[in-house]
Image 1 (cartoon, helix red, strand yellow):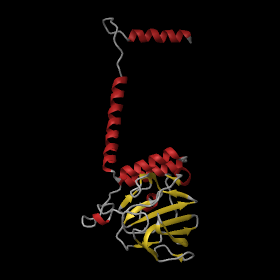
Image 2 (image 1 turned 60 degrees about the vertical axis):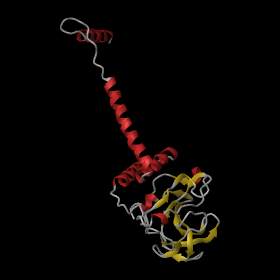
Image 3 (image 1 turned 135 degrees about the horizontal axis):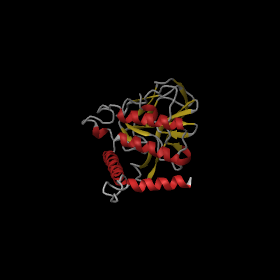
Image 4 (image 1 turned 90 degrees about the vertical axis):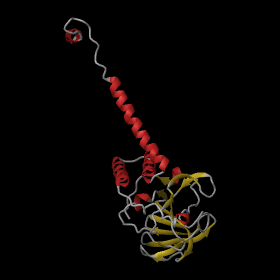
Length: 261
């Protein structure tokens, strides 16, 4: 083995000379590779920064998915499903009506609010969630005014964790049950206003800031039944629905479930 090593080194030294017997410098491959990697990194950084400045839905979805990976243990299958769902969300054509109100309604479509979780690490997850049963969209509007996750509360100004989605919608808009279920709570509180907890097996959906409640505790409802109307009761800046999906006592981002409705 020693002989083979020395022979290799001798051949290498011979190959490092040109035809005139002069030493030649080895080709530098490292610098071009580093330059290319730096340029690619810079382009990715600029694209993400542009998304951030616009606060687009694509950026928010990427951010939520990234935080989910960082804060939660995910199986390879969950990770693959999450990447696929995030890519589909980003590449999916979106009409202007998806998250924008018309010019005439924009002023009346800014409602947000609600209380925030005190212990999000124990009670919330950014992991993708997929339900076997198709959901009914609780309100027709797709204008999201406050996303799931960490935020500055629009009413209190305090930093906290928003456990659902705030979906702006005109006052009095019918709110539909997302799934078949039993009304677990139909009450009022200072922060949530008039709200409903609908129990559907191990899934609970929450509807807050309602102007009117059309059901009471113990009522059985079908998916699509009108259970309340949009309002701005409780801690709110305007009419909207605060909607949550809770599975086995853990809050999940409703966008994973609502994106295909």
